[in-house]
Image 1 (cartoon, rainbow, N blue to C red):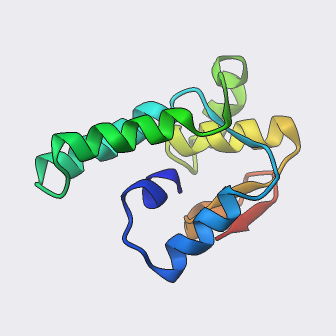
Image 2: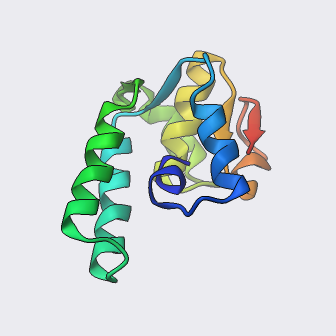
Length: 124
């Protein structure tokens, strides 16, 4: 979702995401969210969709987001259980949402239809 906001065009979908992000609810992500965003920014740069300056601005913007980053290390057991149905990255987000008993906001319909996650999903 953060990559979509940072790199997306000005579309109704992106505006909904920004509105959601600016809501008063606290934002929580995994401790690797910044690396995930950096990876997407790097891909965009390599294919010529972003200049180095634009990539640096996106990276700074994401680093400044008022978002708590939580470590997944303590949730490794649940993370492994979830990996039967999800990527390791998605499993981390799901495990954190479950531990916090909080809804997981996603753009991913497949993740939101998880047969094993115990957290609620908000599909944006």
